[in-house]
Image (tube, helix red, strand yellow):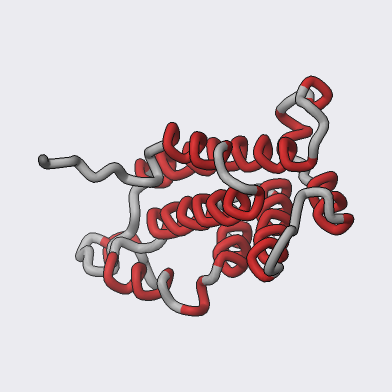
Length: 175
């Protein structure tokens, strides 16, 4: 049996199903990993066309989730609201990942962070969604993943500058 391997960044159905059918801890970790992978792809598409160097940089310790969030924001690839929400999701992920047992969306710190998520409130009437901090988290992640997915497509289409391109010398003129 030859199974075609699905690119996890384009397997939206698999991502959403897994996100909804997991424990809170697993959902938070899966969501964060997906968003982190999307940011990595956006950055990779935005760097010069030298895949080896770009891959080495993005896979280095310098480019953890928090660094990817910051560099994407500083390069103007994500808005302030998305920057804010990605950082909140990162904080929630860290709490869930480092708590050994029984951590839920009802923890006071998690409640505050979920309440501070901006993107879901900007895009959707959250009053129509069953009131739970877990639901708000999943809604925000879903909207962020969708936006970042569109940004991946946009950055794939944009022309990268190749440092090996001899035509580059014609673009840069010195007086």
